[in-house]
Image 1 (cartoon, rainbow, N blue to C red):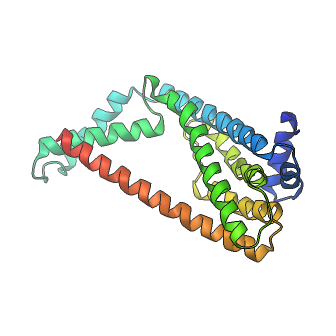
Image 2: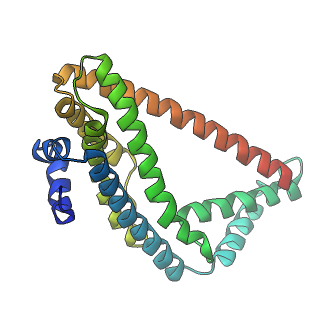
Image 3: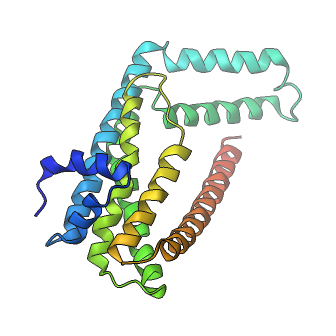
Length: 237
């Protein structure tokens, strides 16, 4: 059984695509349990960093209500609201949209900042399950020989690049979403190649199919979210 104090070393090795951490997780007595624990640990660390970043951001800036009023006044002074068919409804919708943006940034008071402590680990778990389960199925179709628990163990290292998001504990620090995503896909390729004894070409094909499936899921989720926001703003108007 892998000791938790080995996780930082495994994360560092996974970031440079060394085979040792993948092999260790594949050969472990309970690979999926190790993968679950590693994914949750990284999610908790990143979630706490985001919570601290949102708390410090809120402390460093004026009250959210004051910032909101300044933004609304800027739109009103620009004449953009007056050009709409219903300026009152447009202002109400704009207020809701800006408030939603503040919540997403973690800028505000109340319990919403605590959501990062739950949503970040949960999102990492869901991504781990998708890439582990779907990756296992695709790899087996391409001739892979690994077991499901081995795939889940190796795929947990996909969370390693997200450790960079710990930097968001500092106010106004932002990490582009593409960097951890592309890095994670490189790790997924390595995980599938090792856990299923696949050639780099077959592992690349499996990773590509996984990426396309994940992109489709994101598009569907984004469309549903956009539709929900449209209905919400329409109801507010």
